[in-house]
Structures are given as C-alpha cells and as structure tokens.
Image 1 (tube, rainbow, N blue to C red):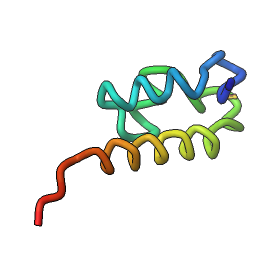
Image 2: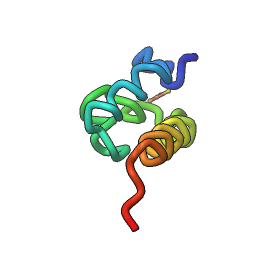
Image 3: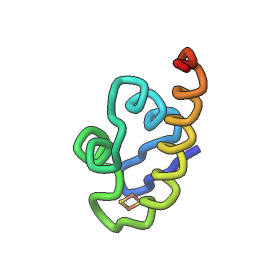
Length: 64
Ligand code: FES
C-alpha cells in the first residue's frame, strides 16, 4: 500500500527501513523522504512505524 504519494513510498519500504534502524519519523524522512513535501502521509507513516516497532519489541526476549 502506498503511504506517501509524493515520493511513492509504500508501507513495506517503511517497515524495511525500520528493521534497518530508522526508528523515528525524522529518520524515515531523511531515508525515504516520507512527509517531506505535503506532509499528508505523516499520520499514516507514523502508524506503520509504530506498528513495526511494536512487532519488533514483541520478538525481543523478556528481561525480568
Ligand atoms: S504524501 Fe508524503 S509528503 Fe506528500
């Protein structure tokens, strides 16, 4: 699914960037230019970013 129409960025590209270490919107913007033009994709991109971060966190071993 396209998230950023201005730069043709998909949810899969965002997820791959998060896996590679882009853990903030600022980093996503630098890497993929998400939200750097009209800004209409910011909320959706942030949702994709946060969902991916949760999935990654759930896979980490529990330290208690
Ligand atoms: S849709 Fe992403 S900057 Fe315009």
